[in-house]
Image (cartoon, rainbow, N blue to C red; front, side):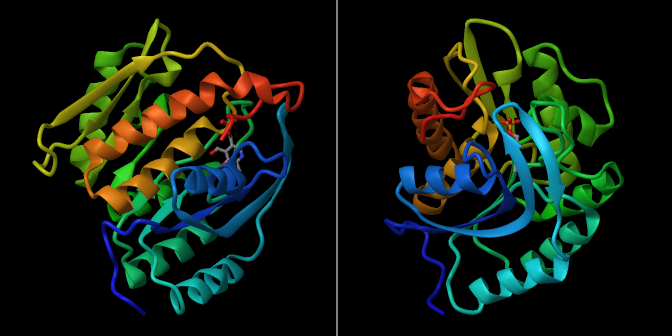
Length: 272
Ligand code: PLP
């Protein structure tokens, strides 16, 4: 295998995530985002969902050992410049992913701690929440939405930006990595996002970037898309602040035009 190559023009980015056959979230969203940001996309599927823009109808988690075979097949042949981890389904899957990450140690690991879809459907078994915490120290960047941030800390969900930032600081301190605190779930005319790190790995403890809020119901898959965009840009740029700026401005454009897609009757997908 050739050496990991930060700064590579076309980074090789692997999504380890669930499938959304309607194309809006999960690995389908990840592959479209990775391509849009100029990466080479790969996908190892953790779980299959039957879903559309209105909700999740069923979830099937194949044997975790088969996921491990997918991961080993890729890493025994291809140098992986960045990994994005999304839906994991259950604890057996988490254990396999943890074992593989510990062995391969990819240069960039972004973990989107997916637990419950916007539709309210569970994407991670409740009994697997502890196992998910065991994966957090292996991630460079964690990208929880506000309900996920609260759940990981065992605290009530933040209802204002300052308390969300405080929660982000607590999570970052607990796991020694960087947390992206996302303001998308809060009301208001603007949408702040912040990289939070309390161990001096960033130029400042809190790097906040605020952009306009796009009023649209077509936001299905936004979290998936942002985390894979960040993994892709970070593999090329190697600087989280630059990566957030680039990924966020790309996502703003994608959300702005998502209404034109006309896909489904529910929460339509982001336009990649
Ligand atoms: N389906 C899969 C496979 C996902 O990974 C996710 C989110 O990560 C979703 C659905 C939910 O997407 P949203 O909450 O944006 O509707």
